[in-house]
Image (cartoon, rainbow, N blue to C red):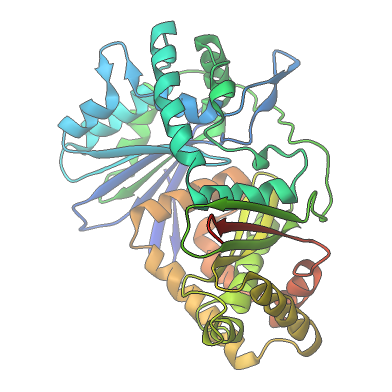
Length: 424
């Protein structure tokens, strides 16, 4: 495997590809007892429409999440139980654009890695097991729909996007998962659990060549061309609707105020835009920001108020919010802060502190094996080097962030999602 040393962060990363296209990363952590393995596919909740056999295929909402649940089934038993009984702590998740299977262990790492590679690459579905899973996930859907945080989040996305599948819940609906069959799962596995569309990341004190050799021995299926995906037409930056409101069992109102951001196709420009958005969110609403202090001191918001920037597939959004006593007052102050930055700029000392804080957070993240794997995988799928993030942070100027806030944080592009107390 090829070795790349990152002197600025004190890390070494080994990388190679199998002949079938599977990307393999090993981040060497000498002296650590814990080892972490992460096997992911560039496939998530938004990937519902794609080309299969030369034709466009539409799949039900919730298929990626459903498939994640069923992948642990093997003819000889459940892989989750096998890993746990062998000393591993396994899990999996489906996000809007990634599905990942992972474990950490101190002992029996190589046996556990073999299990991980085998079950993720070996689909095994039956009509009976699919029907059983529909009942299990149906219960999960009920719990998700009753969660105020989930409703708040998807309320904002449904305001921002008219057609993009980002607006639909990853788990689907009871009606949509009822349409899923074993044939659906096999087709989606063939299309997306394709070595060219996947990456294996390992962090720990392991021999990189042994990781490569094991993957080569087990992942033998040929790599298929990565399919075209359709996320709908370009909707521009304006929201589809301006406001979402719902009453639920909450003590105080919850709100998200946010807007869309157009992302580059990939590469270092994608990483720069991602970081620029993250810096903008921290400048506007970080715990040390003037806005946060003003909102909190006036009693308009609670301590969980924050700003975030998220990029998903071909789009992104910046969002501010949390628990509030006065949503309207908080919204007015957020817009006023954005206008102030557009007119007067960002204080240099404050900006420098934000940059130092973000670089520090990147360096601390190198001690979290799961964060390393997620970031490396995300970068691989978007064609950028995630290990260069701290270097890129240093290149983003105040003027670029000021321009980003001016261009994206304004009432014309934003929508508001609010969950109100039922007795309010």
